[in-house]
Image (cartoon, rainbow, N blue to C red; front, side, top):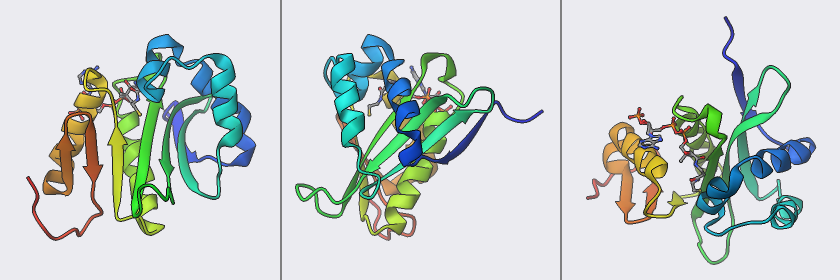
Length: 165
Ligand SMILES: CC(C)(COP(=O)(O)OP(=O)(O)OC[C@H]1O[C@@H](n2cnc3c(N)ncnc32)[C@H](O)[C@@H]1OP(=O)(O)O)[C@@H](O)C(=O)NCCC(=O)NCCS
């Protein structure tokens, strides 16, 4: 049987589905994702501002109905953070704990590195158990290529030579 979702790059045409995804996150999910309580209008404005030329988005898209059930974003070219891609990830509640965040973050980070990013940074609230689990899981796979600090993790490109603590 085919997997219930497929992973693919998201593009301009996906803007309405991206907005529906973020609106469906619920209050706690919105706070965790945006680090503040985003109202519907703030999400709509955020989605309008998405610049597909300067970011990489991967979605987990339901085969049945086409809803975006999970999404990872890599924001590139921020002059405040040269060389960094800032990653964000959100998975709808009923779709968590299936490895989707892990796979989407892997893909978004890999694409960001091919676009010239030297590191990918994940910012999260320190009391977010899902992100703590995700970062621990990435650390198992990446070992010294993942740096972790309280509320932040940095994913380094494959082949990064130096071991870091
Ligand atoms: C955090 C979040 C993205 C995790 O998504 P997910 O798809 O459930 O994560 P995965 O299934 O890929 O899990 C990755 C690892 O984290 C672990 N994990 C996931 N949720 C966990 C939880 N609540 N507590 C402990 N560990 C957890 C999994 O067991 C897995 O570990 P493993 O690879 O060793 O088995 C999801 O809970 C979410 O969207 N939260 C709201 C938005 C948010 O917090 N975004 C982050 C800020 S940008």
